[in-house]
Length: 143
Image 1 (tube, rainbow, N blue to C red):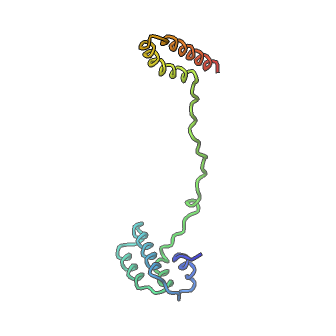
Image 2 (cartoon, one colour):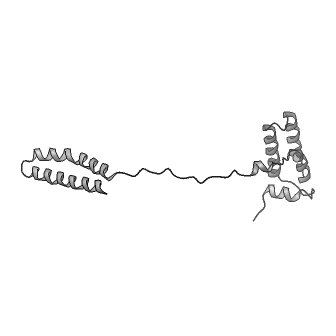
Image 3 (cartoon, one colour):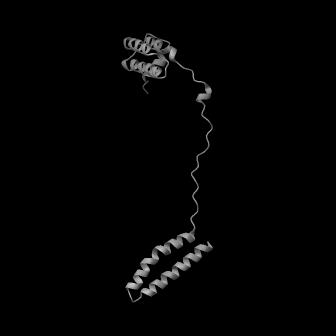
């Protein structure tokens, strides 16, 4: 597994004679910009340090530019607060009786319309469907 520029810089802090790459210089400049945004550097300090970062040849020179910007984070900031498990909201149970009534209300108008348009057998279909709706609604009321 190849080491990245940050890993190389961390390994080279003890030995400052290792040459730095352009990517390492850019990484230091990004860290200086971040420190400027956070108010830890003035604009003059930023431009001066960025100029020195561009001409730096070794990790020791780059490390010296950001040595005073290293921040120790208090332990209470790094500890995650205890989290509660997230539960999905419970769904309300659907009433079978309500489903039966809605089904009857949806089926009834076309059935009545068909019963009056077709004279032969229309009333029998209407009677069968009404009886089926009555059976379903009474079974749903008991369950």
